Amino acid sequence: MNDILPDVSARWQYFEGTVKQLLNSYGYREIRMPIVEQTALFKRSIGEVTDIVEKEMYTFEDRNGDSLTLRPEGTAGCVRACEEHGLTYNQQQRLYYMGPMFRHERPQKGRYRQFHQIGVETFGMTGPDIDAELILLSARLWRQLGILSHLTLELNTLGSSEARQAYRTALVAYLEQHLDQLDDDSRRRLSSNPLRILDSKDESTRQVLQGAPSFYDYIDAESLEHFNRLKAMLDDAGVDYVVNPTLVRGLDYYGKTVFEWTTTALGAQGTVCAGGRYDGLVEQLGGKPTPAVGFAMGVERLILLLETLEAFPATLDQHIDVYLLAVGQDIDHQALLLAERLRSELPELRLQTHCGGGSFKSQMKKADRSGAAIALLLGEDEVAQGQVSIKYLREARDQVSVALGDLASYLKENTAL
Ligand code: ATP
Ligand code: MG
Image: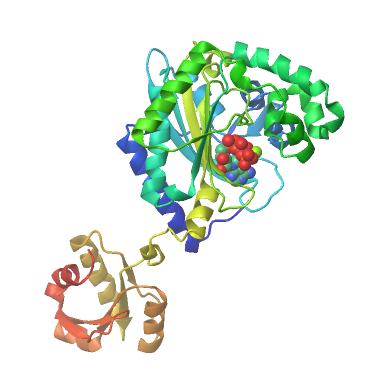
C-alpha cells in the first residue's frame, strides 16, 4: 500500500481530471460507493473459485459478527447500489467511480495491495453500440493523454452462458487427455474454472492449449452477430484491435464482449484497462434482468506508463505562479493583505505568501525552490512608495517596480493567466 506524496499527487490530479472531463463530455455521471461491502456480495458476483475470492480478499468480521470485505473491485458494489436505489429500474445509466481497491496479492511493480481504479459501468443497453462507445471513449482518452500508440486493444467474445457451457465440456474433455502436461494451477481449475486455463502463462500448458478446441466453433449466433457488429463499428471508427481468443478475464460475470488495453512498456503488468459485458449480473444479484457493460482502468499502471513515456505536461511540476516575499518589520501584515487582494482580483493566480519572516536572502531561496516564475518583493521601501518589486526567477529579465494599484493588470499581462 502506498502513500501518494505531494510531488506526485499533481500527476494523479492531472490524470483523474482528464478522465473526469472526458467522461462528463460523454454524459457519464459519478457514483460513490462505500469501500466495504458484505463479503457475500463479492462471492456471489466475482465467483467463489476465482483468484480474487479464493485468495486475495481482505475479509474481516465487524463488531456485529457480520463478514465484511474491503472491495477488490467496483462493479459488484455499483450493481448493489443501483439495485438498492432503483437506478436501473426501467432506465438506462452511464456511471463512473474512482477510488481505492484492495487485493492481497504479491506486491511488485504495477501490482499493489491497495490500488486505484476508475471504473465505468453502463446499464440497460444491449449493445453493441454501447460496447463500442466505451471502447471509443477509452481510445479518445489515450489519444488525449498522448499514449494511444503505445497501447493495443485486445478483443474477444465469451458468447452466451449456454455456449460457454458447451465449450467448457469440450475443453475439459480435451484437457483431461493431457493431464500430465498441465501445471498444478490448471489441473486444479479443470474442475472449478476451466476457461481460466486458457489464460495460463505456463509453457507446457500453453503447448497443450495449441491443440484445444476453439470457442468460435461453439459460439451462439446472437453473440457472434453482436461481436461482428462491434468489430464493424470499431473498423469504421478507425480503432485498431487484435482478436485474442484466449482473453477470458478473471471474473465470472462476463459474457459476450470482453476487452483489454495492454502495453509492452511496463513489463509483466501490461494490462492498464479491462472490461466487458455482464448481462447476467444484475439478475444474479436479485434485480430484474438488465444488460450491462463496463470497464476499469488501473490508475497506478497508467501513471507509471505516462511517467515511462514522459507524457506528463512539463508544467505539472510548477505548482505556483508567484511567490510573495515580505521583508522587514511588520511587512508580513501588509503582505497578507496584498495577497488577499490579488487573489480577489485574479482568481486563477496561484500565489504563495512567504510566512515566518527571515532575511531577504533566505526568502529568495525559498521563492526559487518553490518553482514560481515570479517573486514579488514587498519591503519597507516598497511599502513607503506604494510599490512592489518584481523579480523574474526563470528568465533573464530586469527587475521592475509596479505601483500597487497596477499590480493585478501587470501580472495578467506578464504571466500565462
Ligand atoms: P491482472 O491480470 O493484471 O491481475 P486483473 O484481471 O486482476 O489484472 P481487473 O480485475 O480486470 O484486473 O482490474 C482492472 C485493472 O485494474 C487491471 O487491468 C489493472 O490495470 C488494475 N489492477 C488490477 N489489480 C491490480 C493491483 N493489484 N495493483 C495495481 N493495479 C491493479
Ligand atoms: Mg489479478
